[in-house]
Image 1 (cartoon, one colour):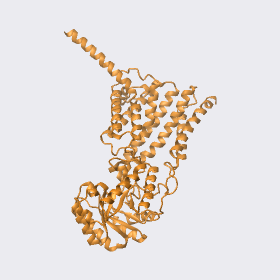
Image 2 (spheres, rainbow, N blue to C red):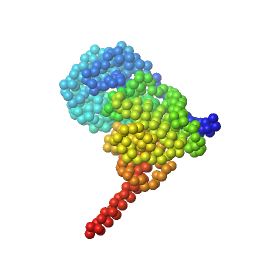
Image 3 (cartoon, rainbow, N blue to C red):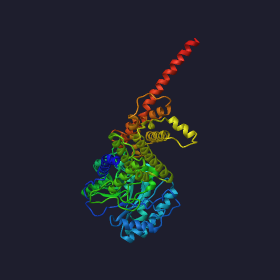
Image 4 (cartoon, rainbow, N blue to C red):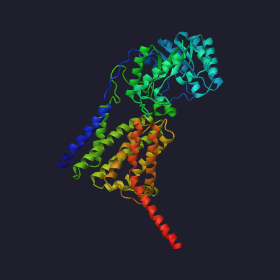
Length: 553
């Protein structure tokens, strides 16, 4: 009992710090309320779960669309579609039954035969339900994809207007409208532009997003006097990687949309939000951020309130409790009450256990967001298990005062992998975990160097290994020249080199990139001793080579 009593203050302190951090992460943020009860319009694609428009054999059942439209009806009287195949033609009659309007999209691509089918179906719908269709959008970002010329789009738009008897427009990123030929300008009834500050070539923070959009709207209005300008797509992702200082988050999504609504009402601007529901299939094309632009989640639940303060972690007390329970469980696994470690080691072990619990609770929800299939989810689970094992074993080594356990070389780990005839010793297990962490981090960093646009920064997965192994090495003999550690030296060199490149590529305002670079440098610290060891080996080899040369001479 005396031993457990000595542990109470550090455990309570570490738990309190963990809860305080969760309270800060989950703090409610006050935002301007939406000035109107209903949105003008929202992009609607009905795909759920594994459904994807890339599967051309898929047809969405009408009842699925009807469920979605009934859910959207309280917040908007309009939806925008992008095609009329795969069951999307049912949106118009179902919307008509609910008294809703449709901005009917025709998907225009590179194949004339497919375009013709889209146009004919849209014209049929226009004749059958003229009162349900606000306008027909003849093509979406076709110029951006380079699949048709502006003149061809102008011909198609004029034809659809004539055959349908309804207003027509074309939708594209705002820069392409400014470059559009006069024929396209003349063939549409109004101009539909896409303004997505997150995806701009020079990304903007959410605080500057609406001001940037306002500047663009003014520029386009000046370029198209007499034409109505509609913002056909705007929004902000609730999850994904930072692009410079453009940070996806639930709070930032709510902030952008609610700030935009205040501006749109004052500027008398028509708009359409992208999008109604999260679309996980987009993660294959646009990374994590692509799947999380919805006002509603994939589960069809609203993400935030349009009037109340918004929190990034609505259930943060539950997460805080879970992380503390996990931390205490980790201490229990290492039987913290045995022995009488000093106050420093008790505090370090308590903080390490709570940090491990925090990282696990942060990692798994993020892993669920980024995983696109079962194999990726399995990999993320293995990474979580690695975090748990790393935290547990390092705490055990700290409390047993056998900190040299964390100093096992990769050669020991590789030797065991080649001949795993018996269970590895604790020292070898820790070396295996460190090897896995460095290889994983190096792989991520190389990807962020050569293909960064759609890759995430997996911070939660590597916080514990980076801090834990750095602490273990700093408390040991980090600067002692270690022999026969070429693997550590190579991986360390990769991590340090890629950290510099990532920081240069992402810019100084990307806090995610900054945090990732710090973690990778921490992971690379043990390699400093390995570099010194390699240098000493090279010097010895050079000296011996010179001696042999003299003898031979």
